Amino acid sequence: MASGMTRAGVFDSFDIPLWFKTEVPASGIVPPVSFQHLGALLVTQLENTSDENLNIFIIPLVYRKTDYALVGFREPEVSPVSLREEIPGFNLITQTVEDYAPFVSSQPFTTIVDARETEAFAYWGIPRADNIPETVLGITVPKPGGQDATFFSTTSKPARDALQTGHAYHISAEWDGTELRFPGEVEPNRPRLPIEYVAEYNVSVTAGTFTDSHANNKSGYFDWDAARTACPAGYHLPSQDEWRGILPNHLYGVYVNFQGIGKGVDNCVEEIVVGGQEKRTFTADYSCPVGAVGVAYALRFKDEKNQYRSAWRYEYLDNPSAGGGKMMKITVRYLGPASTLSLSNITNDAFWAETDVEYITRTFPACGYIFSYGGNTSTLRVGEWGRYWSATDSDSMYAYAMVFDNEWAGSRFDTSKPSAFSIRCVRDN
Image (cartoon, rainbow, N blue to C red; front, top):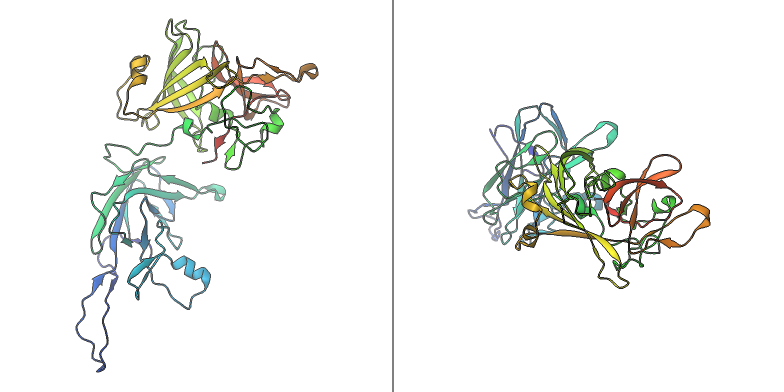
């Protein structure tokens, strides 16, 4: 019986897990039996299209959105630790799979897929007959210093029917050096956009907790040192590179201008960190149409793959929460690599009123700030300005912040660390 991951290569031979159940008569002579397949053969063909060898650890770690079991038998006499390594398993007495769970290879598996070469990997799985799985592929790549990096495919592979025992299922994937994906997919399982890492609400007056309101007087104010540890568990204060994924660096209305004076720029180069990954370079187009007071548009995250390509709308609006004042609302609509829309297609209300599409929004109340100079402890510009710390400092006295007001918005405002600003956290992953 085959159990665990196997490097397939050429299938000259392969162990097939079979089983049978029969009653042994008093005579002790076992009658003819019919063997049944224990699971389905799942084969992943991985093509390395990059110019560098791919050194892989724990491969290919196929993860399914519906549960299924890796073929394996429980051994009653094994230790609890070994037992955990064996589950999920097939119980021959009850003829059921116990402890269905997403597949995780029980033993480390390291191999190399040479540059411009293809390898196949196989294992036996016991599927649920009533579930139609959707497959996402993942690989873990060792990096210098022991910091392994795990990459999950940016596209998914839905099955047409539920998997059946006794059948073989083949999926093909490719690695280009930065991305893992199923080739030829028409509808991508889109990646999480930078705006989706941003928490829904500000940190409250109590560090480590979120407020439940976008009102301009319900958030806490923290100096830079306190802000660095004020986010709840699972969140952190965004770096300046992460804030750049929400708003461009440029200040004073060059890119995001709310005055309706017709400013804009094409193919702005932006270096951005998305979801804690390495910094990547994108380009973006910004438009602040003439007469469009309080609104700006952008076509962002353009690169060769356009994996994160999306339309963005920035608005400086009345805050409907108790207390009134203003707020900044950011609305994002995913476009992806298949879209041919340009900036001119998204700078109108009709585009943002379309139904049957997904809109992602975040609201930033204009909470004002507390300026530290001269012992001042009163809040200033509440209902007018927004000031949100980043985790990045420029020197021992100053750090960067995301800021907005009725004229413009930007992510690289250099200000004194003792000043007390609002905090908007981002998810760790």
